[in-house]
Length: 128
Ligand code: 5GP
Image 1: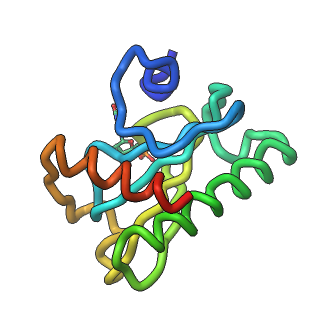
Image 2: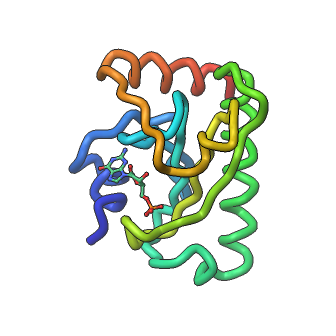
């Protein structure tokens, strides 16, 4: 069972932004930038491009909704999207509020307090 499946089931806590029957969106615990969000299909599939075409399209549509809310909630130039998956073998997309290219390079991280994560998740959810 992946760490994201444990997050989705509530076994591991997360700063949730939103969910529906297919997808779960929450803050990345080691963010590149404030508001760095992960959007994950509840069905555990290893690689993003292994999703069937319908589930892939649905995920993109859901990620788009979250990205629009994210851009309203977090001051940034735009929302970047990245697909990596080298750390967690459960398909997901990263949505990252960008000010500069380095925000999507996964080598500069920001440290946030629990209350800051909570506040960010609420702020983003309120824009949905
Ligand atoms: P990737 O698999 O795309 O290389 O990276 C996985 C991402 O998941 C990383 O950015 C990492 O910080 C995030 N991550 C890993 N474990 C957890 C966790 O337990 N909770 C949360 N919120 N994020 C996690």
